[in-house]
Image (cartoon, rainbow over all chains, first blue to last red; front, side):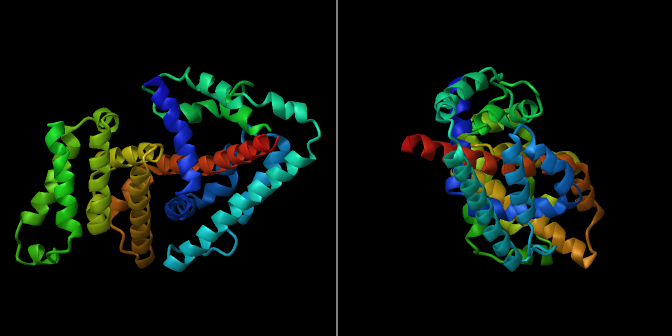
Length: 156
Length: 170
């Protein structure tokens, strides 16, 4: 059960990004409009939490750009626009991260981050098996401990 | 119980999505068949524990199939569920997004998409019934949690992807 939990989380993240972005973007627009008042304040804070400062800046600008040219309706055309924005959002993050990596001369630090996935798995295994992954993640993210797996993985 | 529940969703799927009958006719002639059918869904929902629903893979798959079918055919029925039942459904959807199964994620997406489109349409026309609005207000936090999970998933996966490419180059 433990192993399958970890596997499912790993797989889930991959699937979300590689095949499913079109499907995910549709409910995402509705959810953002539903939470519009808090989206640019609280939710953004929550999303940025645990990232390094440089990455926070990148993510922040990318998140701001997410809603450009989108009006407050859920029409089909609007959803299509939003899907394009989401794709752009992904590309922005990827590009800037890649740029950061190339500029980063301290290669040894990135080598030392090689076993990251394994350390992530081992820390994930401390999660009780019957706790749903959602709760497990949401409790991990706000914790200020340096070993928070998400934070560790994000700090490139 | 669990075994037989596996087949009902498929029955539902073929029956509803086959477009064999115009379902409005049932209501017009006050034939309760259609409503009874929807009540079957509710009784399945209330007879199975949420834990069991998410543990047995085949049952999970059929549950999400039924949810997807109903949201495509009869979203107002799902939106007008009583508050605890709607919360139950929404919690399973929130869990479903974290499932590794592609089909389940898609079903969750379709449910949320049609539901939110329905709510926004009603609000725009100013005809939203109070039951729907109270459902939305009651579970605002859950909606927010789903939003955060989805966005985090996207951001997280981007970071991982870049890191993988980088390591491969080295």
